[in-house]
Image 1 (cartoon, one colour):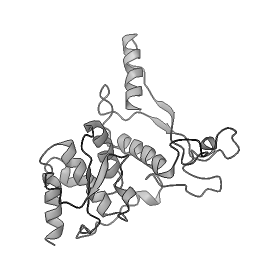
Image 2: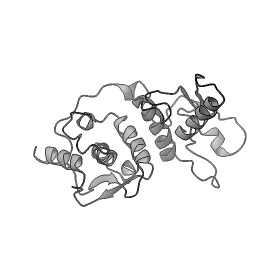
Image 3: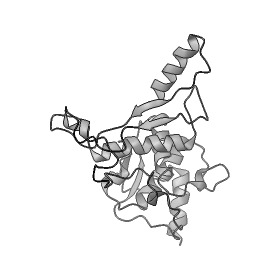
Amino acid sequence: MVVQVDSVHSALSAMGFKDVEIMVAETGWPYSGDSNEVGPSIENAKAYNGNLIAHLKSMVGTPLMPGKSVDTYLFALYDEDLKPGPGSERAFGLYKPDLSMTYDVGISKSSQTPKTPVTPQPKPTATGWCVPKAGISDAQLQSSLDYACGQGIDCSPIQPGGACFEPNTIASHAAYAMNLYYQNSAKNPWNCDFSQTATLTSQNPSKYTSLKLYLSSITDN
């Protein structure tokens, strides 16, 4: 979506309309579909919409419009259960027609209630650590980082001045956020997916200095 927004902005600027406000009128992902449809699933829908919301909240913006959160409308708040066409057409809603939640992407009132930090943090178990996969681009890792930090975990240590800010690389910060999110979850394999940018390892990922500091802090307690 970032590429599409910047493409529109670039085209408008080339035509002399640099100050036209751009908004995303409709974007979303189906959580279900017919057997011949590739892609619809609750996991994919939650990853897409969750990463989108986290990116918008971060105010990172786009390469051509940094520091700006583009007005964006999710499709859709509710399922259109009478809509014709493929099954996915009736499965875009964050909520079902009976008002029950399909999945939580962090915008419900209950999910935004501040939580009291738990000390110490949960220690790594036999399920291992969650780290970025090799060869993943910084843009993909930034998206996963934004998503993880948007789910209520404490990312202050990787902010400027934080204990785990150095090394100041996206890979190092993503490793910290991914693993902290995973350790605070049910530690299922899908809790370390991040749109296929992360993987589980049984080896202490000490190449990520910030993650090593995090591991030291929780194993010393």
